[in-house]
Amino acid sequence: MKQKPKVAFICVHNSCRSQIAEALGKHLATDVFESYSAGTETKPQINQDAVRIMKELYGIDMEETQHSKLIDAIPKPDIAISMGCNVGCPFVGRPFDDDWGLEDPTGKSDEEFEKTITEIERRILRLKEEIAREI
Image (cartoon, rainbow, N blue to C red; front, side, top):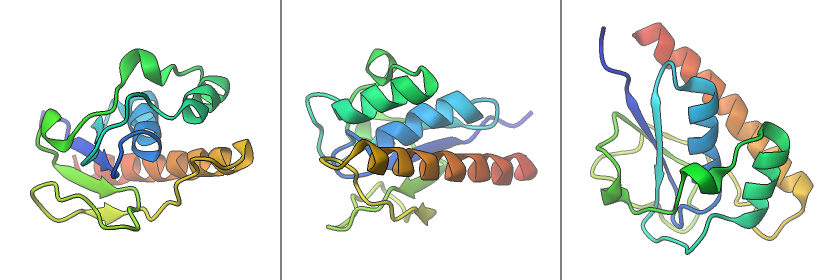
């Protein structure tokens, strides 16, 4: 059997959207692809609202299994997805396969976080289906 593809979720700070995508990828699609996240800058900790809400919705403690990291700290991805950088996406050594164009919910209401998380979940499940068809 072919090796599972490595999917990298990329945003500038690797503290919110890309971390959520990595966590949901590991939670929902680990049987089909490996999930990683990274950025061009790091934050000392993952966004605390994202951590709290992911714990409430999925029972996932992102701080237990993840940390903010730079692009060169993850394996070379087979699929690279931009979370929506607005200010200029980091370069991962190749073009992005997709740009999810998601607004950063940092500093916004729990409802905005939940909308973003729901959209990321929907896209992870769609990506899982697409990759499963190819392998």
